[in-house]
Length: 409
Image (cartoon, rainbow, N blue to C red; front, side, top):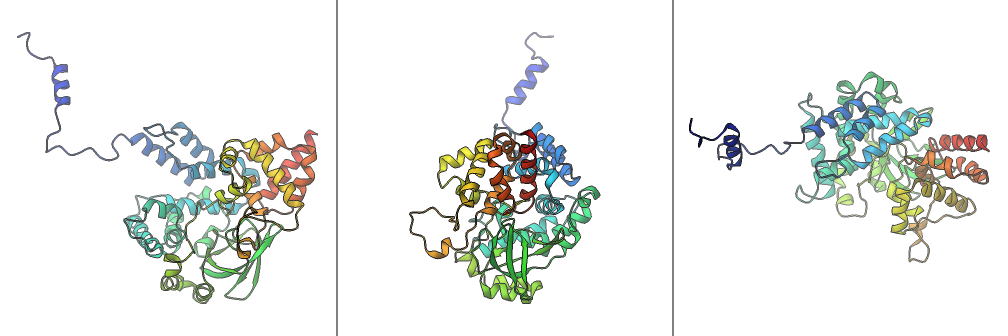
């Protein structure tokens, strides 16, 4: 055999170096992503089982993408950490909200209608935002648009489909009457304000004044502002499945009179959302609080960006700031949300109360342990008063922290 003949290895290297022929198909967009796709499937399956630790283990096993950036959404990691760390004090409605989140985000390949439902919900979100497909990010609308979520879960039946096809008995068993949540109608309400861990709303369908645990569902509203939303059972009372959406009194009244036709009512008044100041954009649909994270974080940081960054990376600094701010607010008869020294009208300041923001901060991942590290016996009086002004699960968490500090003293 001629010693000039190429070896098999040389021939393979030469073939690999040739440009792809026109007949060869281009690489699939997800080529090389198989390990992350499998990880997503494993994490989704763990969540459907109600296995918080299992989902976190999957995420921590492959946290970064091919470029070394965080692969997972921070909101998802935060939710799972809250479920894990706060488990002893979490009411069952938190699991119900977890199910809503899963039903919104999961893509069930066994359901041929899933893609169609999502596209129809996305069309509604784009229509009501006044943005066309080129202007509105589909991912942003799916993650943050209130109308997209409502239409997908209820009008398109994604919640019912998730419960019947994907959710495991263990997950459903830990929830609070989730079948009733799936049948909850839209309603029209007026927010009356909140104090001492309780919020008040007028149900426009009945005229009844409702008193609910204050988890911040009205934190983006001022007193006497109308809204639409879904009331669901929670423990011995009721709550909103997520923070209601601000709207006009005409729209809220019409929705209260015709819950099944709420979407037609909103569409007919679409310019309120397309052209007005009412924005159906939500930072995140939280599990344990309805206070937007950037709202309480900006307020605690007193509008100082550097301080806000520090509070996000230092749990003990955040814990100390919560205790000190609570002590300051407890001594005031009137509370401000916006900083002093600026030209704000009376409406922008009206009705502010700080307790839902402090309660939301207490439920951040890492805060339970950090509080136990920074709280002294001298802080117990502040924490005891704060406990009377926040709702569960923040109230129960403070009870645990107070007992822990007393035992260590």
